[in-house]
Amino acid sequence: MSAPATTIEQDIHTALSGVEDPEIRRPITDLGMVDDITVDGSHVALRILLTIAGCPLKDKLRTDINTAVRAVAGVESVSLEFGAMTDDQRKELQTRLRGGGGDEPVIPFSQPGSRTRVFAVASGKGGVGKSSVTVNLAAALAAKGLSVGVVDADIYGHSVPRMLGAADARPTPVEDMIMPPQSHGVKLISIGMFTKGNAAVVWRGPMLHRALQQFLADVYWGELDVLLLDLPPGTGDIAISVAQLLPVAELLVVTTPQAAAAEVAERAGAIAVQTHQRVAGVVENMSWLETPDGNRMELFGSGGGEQVAQALSTRMGTAVPLLGQVPLDQALREAGDEGVPFVLRDKESAAARALNDIAERLSVRTESLAGKPLGLSPKR
Image (cartoon, rainbow, N blue to C red):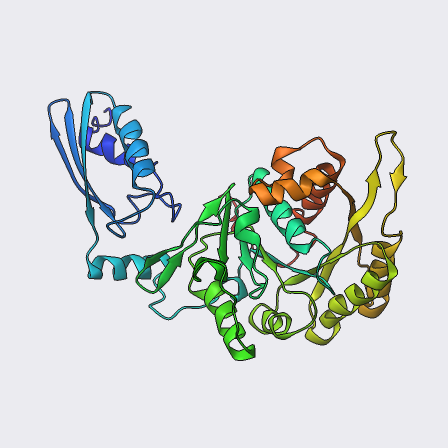
């Protein structure tokens, strides 16, 4: 006996299950956004509930829904009405997004079973290109198909939104949750999204800790493969808070080649000895400048990255690799000012290739799966 044919309403619902909310990145059918489907011959009328009435990506949602429904056999025209969720519906959505765990926010990346790799990008001093490295590694990892998030944890010197082309982006609230903006396939959050203009942030330690905690717990990150935190230089309050809130975070130390920078970078990485964190590796930035005739000018000396990697290996009692050396390139600075990650704009340049190679090394898990359940059962 053949299976009964599906109704056009079922086909439409199936089509809508392939449409994701552009902010939450989950199917609108799973989020309770499909309020009503009415079919009149070949015409379909839909009512969709937005999380907030002024959803900034409503036009994209309209386009995606129209495209999906018009592809259903028998549908010739579509009319679409948008409404807004009630307070109760938003609370229900909040509970659903938090996995039914109630309203109390938790940091998902510190929970048992989290598969998100967390990299805290650190430097001993400012001016070594730490934020540029963070942004380009995030964009390179996202380009490989990974789900990536960035926390701009440099509260005083926040710069990640501009570098990712999201200087004017603002998060969307859903009850007590925050939907992070996305740019170039990367989800991001920064204190700069909550301040007016270029206002300075004048906070002391406890407020810095609370801000970081909210970025991690109150923001809906979804299922991330990789989370990068752009830390402020040095070993101050934020570095300590990261160790407390995200004990699984691995340090990624950025330095330049000169000895003075290498010495302070070693101190930044050495905090892992006291916090019992792992150092994923060292990135040497501004390693050399390639001249038009093909020669290399080592403007900041040489050997700093290797020096930091060796010193940290000795301190940690385990191998800390030099993940790569990124040459100076004026276009890298220009890309940051323009808000287009350099690895996406100048893919064939030596600096972009170096950053992509580092991203490739970070995307490979080195942890053992021994003793971990794989969800398999023997076939009877």
